[in-house]
Amino acid sequence: MSKLQSIPQAPQLIVNKDYNPFKSDNYVAPPKLSTFEQHTNVTKSWDILQRELTKSGNEPVLSRSAFEQEHFNSHEHFDFAQLQNSYIVIRNPLELLLIDQQLAHEKIIYHRVLAQLNAEHTAMQQKLFPTTLELTAQDTLVLQELMPQLQKIGFEINEFGGNSFVVNGMPSYFNYDGEQNVIEKIIEQYKNNSTEFKQQAQSRLAISVALGLSIKRGSLLSKEEQKKIYKDLLACPNYETTNTGKPIVIRLNKAMVQGLFDRKI
Image (cartoon, rainbow, N blue to C red; front, side, top):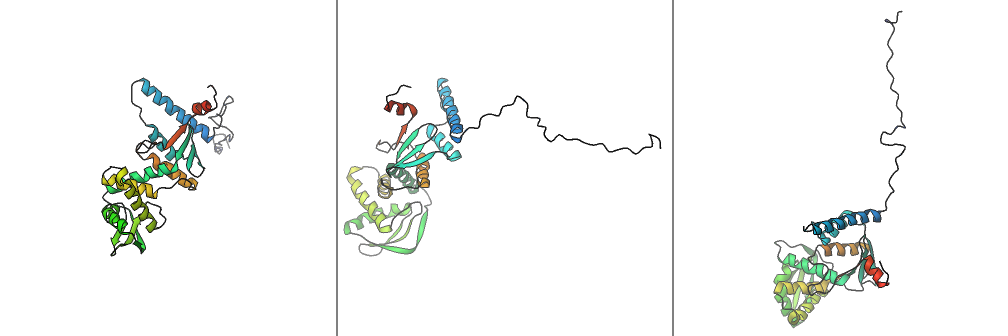
């Protein structure tokens, strides 16, 4: 058989499985950063951007609270702890935060109640077994005054004759320790605020509910509860202070801490 008449052989493909086109002999892998270092780089970039915008006469594109909210929602890497069951301590890449848990929760409830008072629909948790309340004659008059507004924020309360009332529903967005205790707290705070505060009726009720139902100092909180308070607080306007100007959040950065030890930067 001549060469022209020989049977052709199928071509063979030889593959070097160890070959990497993206790898060279001079390539050095970048060091692996810890989570804290990664987020520190992010926050440094944000600070540089804010400074450059200020120098150029432009407004910052993102407020600090909005940045914290976005950063918290994206990563939730902050370290949380509780001091003396009264203060939430948060370590983030920028600084150390101290949050008064009672004042923070009061602020959260206050704005939540105001929002519910102006909303078309209210979140209510219907009770399987209605609760009967027995009040004093004075508290009965106060509750009768408050009932229309309480209904708007999720309470379903009906008169039952005399100084008795029946509770058929409670707000679904509150944690509470018994209907009688909750209603009495709100009434008591509302009476105490009658001369101290001169706000309109909605604001006065919101203050009373916030003071009555807020988490108090000395209450042990889980990590999730600490995170929720911080996240909800960030959503409040002017979240770092109360309506009367008391601080809710205290920030300690490196310079402030070093100053406490009389060290030069």
